[in-house]
Length: 121
Image (tube, rainbow, N blue to C red):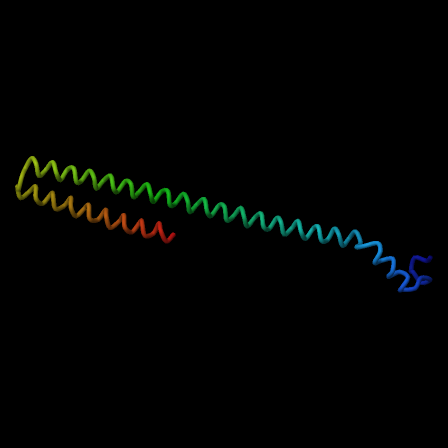
């Protein structure tokens, strides 16, 4: 046999090619492509995990803020009760009570907004 395969017929060579299977270069190319695809999937998975963790942290922060607002509302309610018990219907105290009620209403509005944001986020 010569290096340029001039003495061998094409059909003879083709019959051996099919029996021997794919060439080493083809196998390496396929393996390289598979490795690159797996690396890309890994990067995408890591990014998704990072995004999910960031969203979870944001939701936790919003829940803490809602709890803080509930606490402020409870404190305002307690102050309101104390003022009513101590001072009755004094006009100055009535304005303080109204201020505290408005503040509580603002807190409730803020809580609703955060709950809605938290549900749809």
